[in-house]
Length: 222
Image (cartoon, rainbow, N blue to C red):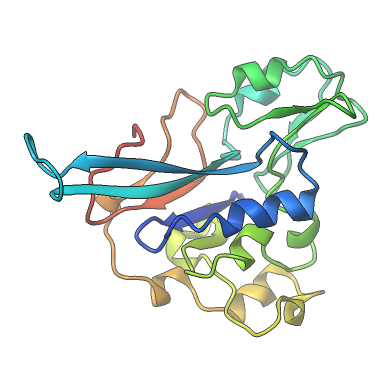
């Protein structure tokens, strides 16, 4: 099986919003809509009764989680929302009637109605780029190497990030060929254990994206 996803090392994320900006530009996301949102979590007290400066905070990028059992797919009356063999959740605009049942079913609020086209849109995990052996645009534009892309079924240590002078170096390569030429999360990032890997709240949908947080208290639910 395959489940493409993104892992974010939250201690490398500085909240620059480059991923958010790149996503909007590349996908021509309308004003007011966001396929990827960077939210600030905190400041929160480091211990009970703590006051500034004994507080902590981190930035949390949130987009479609490309769930294993997506509710958006289950409620779609036309089959426009569907799951591919690579694990990603996609939308066939030719079948979308703009009913927004999927947007209401999504537990993360990451689907939006394109008012001009009258279809629902969201993060595609840059399917058009990944199919050519490239990385999602948000991963390429992450200057802090906080975002990593890969197959969840192969373990997050194998996830890869952009580490070459030009992203076009990898155009035309297969996924396996691309991964063989890139640094992996396991090699590049600070060590972490399973207790420091988190996901957004699971309501039976099994979100695929993961977040690494070592030194602060996770406030995301799971």
